[in-house]
Length: 231
Picture 1 (cartoon, rainbow, N blue to C red):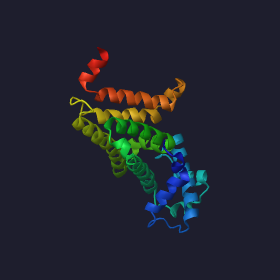
Picture 2: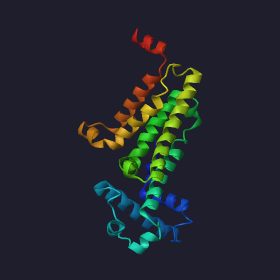
Picture 3: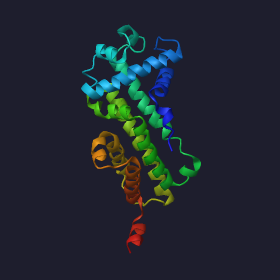
Picture 4: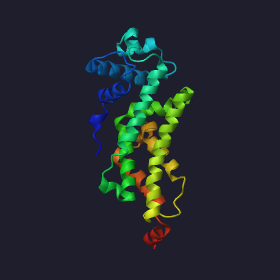
């Protein structure tokens, strides 16, 4: 089970601070993390309310309680802040989806199930971050749109590698569609993008995870196995 304590706003902002140490002017790490956490949390909330493009730095200052001068100690523009947030989403996907234990990765089907569950639980733990990255993507500047696209490609490539390994080992059918990795991504996104739909239906996260796993496994099952279960 994913350790959600790793994904508090302060824990994530500590990693942002580490990656952007050369450009963030505040030198006391504990203080910098606290303030950056206030700033990023406020930016995500304002973006959800009015959109990132409509959010001004004055809005962000008022919402976060950090002065305009204080904001500039962390970034020189909204675009830089955007890059920090998107970069953190991508790095968490890259890191977390690579943490499967050897006993999981040795079996393609188990690895695929693990990836689905881990990705969905990661998006649950970082819900405002992932929602922001998806909803706002169409309004991003070109470079940041590419960051968002590259993050999606990363996830797709991870799934593609496991499916390919399963096809080579015979665990998955040789006729498994090459489109499957691309089709998995919308299933993962639906949990955080259309949350209200599942809340209305009373769908819990465990049920959603199991349903996606079952759908994906059925798309990978060799035809002979399907026929034997139906016979």
